[in-house]
Amino acid sequence: MQIDPRAQTKADNYKVLTNLVVPRPIAWITSVSQTGMVNLAPFSFFNAVGSDPMYVVVGIGARDSGEPKDTAQNIEISREFVVNLVTEELLAAMNISAADFPPDESELDAAKLHTAPSARVRVPRLAEAQASLECKLYQVLPLGTNRLYIAEVVMFQVADHLVGPRMHINNFAPIGRLGSPSIYCRTTDRFEVPRLNYAQWRKSGN
Image (cartoon, rainbow, N blue to C red; front, side):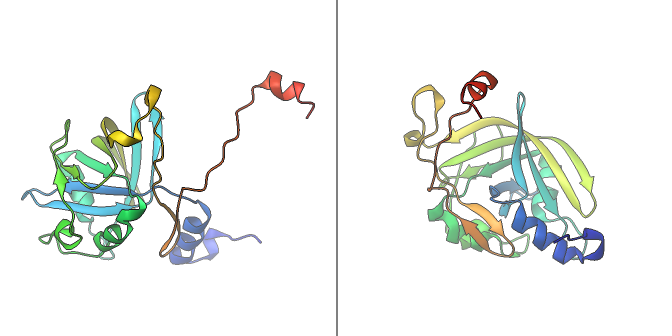
């Protein structure tokens, strides 16, 4: 079946895209407003796109009114934010933080969460998160009704029990976003497939 985006509504295109490009990691972003209010909100248009420098990207859409969301405004003003990864025990709190809280009301208080100081940015990280990425904004690209935020990861905050020899991260199982509006997946069911080089592929007779 061919689905032509030009023949569909924007809502239908969003539904198809977000149900096919899966699973997507969730950027649970802490940011700080001009008044010092810590904002917490999840975004699943998120991923890592480079390792030297270490860049991540986050796509943030506008409100229905066309106005930028609080997170977007905060990032553009402070040029800093923290991505906190969402593990299963934090799913309910993440879902609360996704509600449309007014700018002067804290999602952290509503979700009964706490902050902890970051090391390289002024924005605090989420204390309950097993892993956080401290980020400094590199560039903002307008993309239609969305804005793409490219940021450099300047510090990792990782729970001690996750870090193994040679910087291997073990037993870390964040949840993923599967589909619109509210379908998620666990990442605990895993398997390993060793990488082949060309000579090994030829030798295998395939």
